[in-house]
Amino acid sequence: MLQPKKTKFRRSQKGRMKGNAQRGNRLSFGSFGIKTLQAKWITGQQIEAARIAVTRCMQRQGQVWVRIFPDKPITKKPAEVRMGKGKGSPEGFVVPVTPGRILFEVEGVVFDVAKEALRLAAQKLPVTTKFIVRHDYDFNILK
Image 1: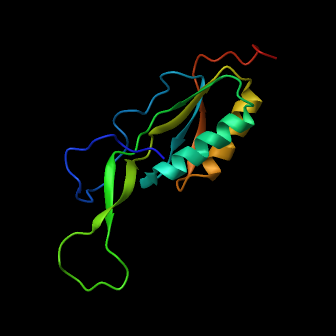
Image 2: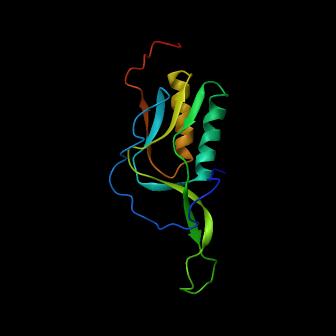
């Protein structure tokens, strides 16, 4: 499960996710990727499940980059506890994503394999995504 080694504060406020992604919204490493079309929280377990789906579909060929990391602590109060008495204890970590944020990038496989692998990854995530291709990608290579 993805989580930071150390955090400055154990608990954080919920915050707001308005607008589109201002950074992490372009392909930086691979030729293919998926970007989110919604604003949501994605947990470390969901990221790991998607990463495993991609690597299995690609049969460990090529390379995968995970462009997001869950560093926001989420708290939860125990069941059947009355209101008040402070904030709950830390439960896990999430990453808030906004529309346009690149989640995964893939390189070193043909177009069809990359599209299928990232489609399987998108099914594991709680956001709607879009498959994107680098603008200078040559579709005639690796055939």
